[in-house]
Image (cartoon, rainbow, N blue to C red):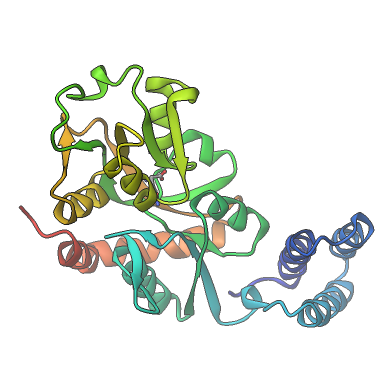
Length: 288
Ligand code: GLN
């Protein structure tokens, strides 16, 4: 990314803090990194801070992507058709749109796969430049990150075992065990519907669905397109009731990074106008 030296110094310091925290670095070390960037008042000092930070980051074995030609996307590749593994590759709607955006920005796309609830923290800390993970725009998330314009719509649906006659939709969920991937809107909505004690949280919706098939839980609450994929692969499951709500997906960037936000919004605009986003979407979600 193209950044001013001061911004680069600050971001590097944040990345270092994150890596220090991850490596169990001491509080003193973390403070030192913050002070270096904060005290970098003059251009020369800022430059020094960048060099110092770069050297230290290299020593730590951390890449300094943000200052180079690489743009890093944080995602959770367990969410077909939005992002999933195909052999060693991470494929799906989001990686393809992200690649098209990176091409427009003239940057090399790098994808970091992580747990869904680690994605927003990774953007906040600067470990990733942006998050793209079939991620719904919510008021709560807006407190930590900024969202681009939306690029897709979704809704939540309930999956149950095919022979379930008790659960016919959200109204008949009370006292039933509902599974979801941790930190997702499925998790949050399930918690509202059945209470914290009746929600089972999993690292992925795949695990939640396995648990449903084994009868350990009564339903899974998840986004419509992944639900369709699970239904197509599991004859012993069905959807209970209609889609529940409307959600919108967008890309998240670090709060206040208007430069990147504007660049991505510009790219989304163009990719919507020339039909690229529709084309990618239709490839993975065939019309009924
Ligand atoms: N759209 C849901 C959310 O943002 C689920 C996303 C996901 O599991 N990747 O919470």
